[in-house]
Length: 295
Image 1 (cartoon, rainbow, N blue to C red):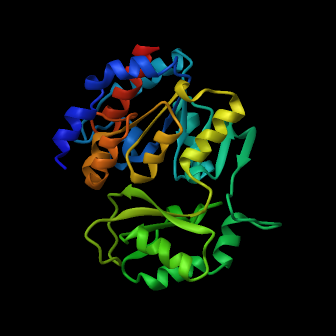
Image 2: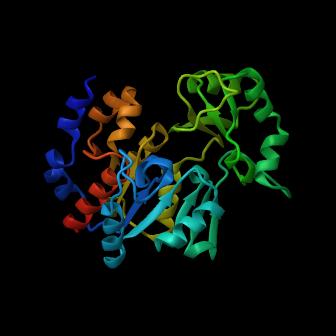
Image 3: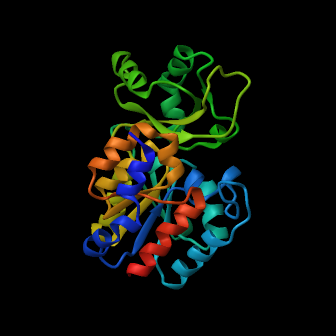
């Protein structure tokens, strides 16, 4: 499907009446980080063309003034998110694609491991001990590897980079006795590896079934007594799309659609999924500005 056609039909401006009718006074914006809130190489002050910009910072500052909670939701582990949240003036975040919900900079932590049960040892070590990580690496030589150095400080979900068919990988896990896990595609990354033979590099998380960003969002809404239509989410990857099932509206930044054109039909078919005109942090700012204007 033509991306420009999707943009015209699902852009924010074209759907502002829908947003006004269907959203309450938004209390929480669940936000992905890399490729969404942040620009190239994870910089908050660069747009997708690497030009300096204050627009995302200005949008964040106004959200802080209005006491709208920007809750980071990321594949990063909670120590990384703690530092990011501290610098940005935020207090709540969801780490490792939904396995840990962290409140007030770590004063309260809720853990969700879905169908995987651990007793007396670290979650990460327990997952590795099943043999599932070695299985995937051996099955996809030169197509999948650990996402070093970021994969070295994980607490719950092994992190890979490469390029594989995730549906095929999920079937392989089922067939070889690793039924409690699935592989999640967390989008394109700029890093290239000399040991991989792939045309495009993507990030993948090995996650226990029953864990996802949208389930973590529902858990947060229940925990804090927040209504669905008081929340929105913004992301850039296929792993972010299920947000739409849990929030009043989900926004995918333009670069997310451009990197994942196969999502076009799914976006067109959903009532509450929209695409930003801007890419990366500019698109993110577009969402925040729109939500604040509607509140």
